[in-house]
Image 1 (tube, rainbow, N blue to C red):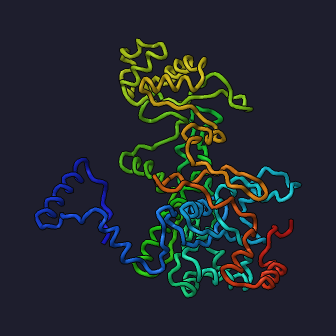
Image 2: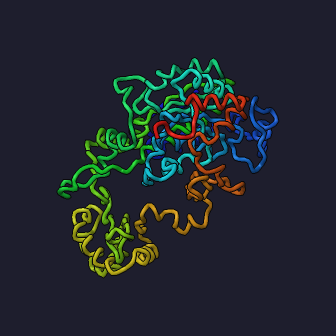
Image 3: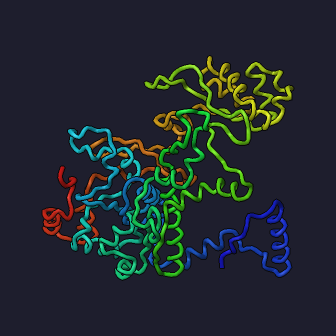
Length: 477
């Protein structure tokens, strides 16, 4: 049975409990371990029904098939991670209602196939296959259920009423495939008063209180108030859904049965805002955003340097965070204020928090004539945490990234090579992180999937296309 959900341990409590547990096991003779590798070898020899034999260089999810009924970023990012790990992910859309992220593009609507050029769609759907199905029609549902019979996972992130309208629930899916793992990603849960509300990352960041901490202080005038963290809620929800999918598959391998899972987006957001809730409940301290400053240490902030951001006319900046007295003393020497290291006005972090305006002016007088790169080199050599502020578009150009295989450039049939960040993990000593392909065009793999997996004839596939149940172009365009 799982360990009870207890309060966090006090300092040293877990260490003492662990020592007692080890002593008990040794006394009872239960502390003897198996020979190295024995449990792994036993698992391989016993095998798991329906598992796929893997070679040393195969990705761990090879042989797994995922039906991806998600849209926008949260759901597709979760299934993208599964694809990066080797799963065959089939992204299901319809020509009547394609994935809305396809339309998030700056390409002119006068451009041919402009809906295929959305950068976020390209990123979150690389390596997948694309299928269109009109699930509002019986023929579409019939085909989906046939695919369910040959799949391991179905993931969706609609509001709950959408699956209701399709007439699809877990019981119907389990009847088609008792081993299916059905993952649902509603914004606010499958039941309750907000059941039918939709949500996006920015919704979650505001309603969970996360944006309360990414805010400018009241003294900032017109800038005062919450600032959206810019969509971190989406990939966080996707990561949680991918994680619980893997846990459910592990359970299925043990029991032979699938299950239904609810992975709620707002709960994911609330789980990462727990610090503010606990701080207020335990200490009555209401945490507030204070731009780039810290509530605990000073100085901390972004400081203007020489040069300007490309095309924006804003100064380049460097991030600095002084966490210890030793770092503070080193900084005072660098900025030409060595006397401050002995000044009682700046003696502790608490003192420096009060004097941060004065400290910031002195730091920026020093950084203003230097490039962020030079400032960072000097600070790091002095043991002071620092980094240049890098525009998002330049992230792939960071030296550690350019020397890794984190960025892949699969070739899209219409767009050409598309730089795409892969999953941020790598199996050391094994194959690289190359993607199975670029993001699919709308319905790109219709014939391949319907004929190859389901055995439909070319004539039947043509009939489905003529009836608008499948297609390769958004309806009405």
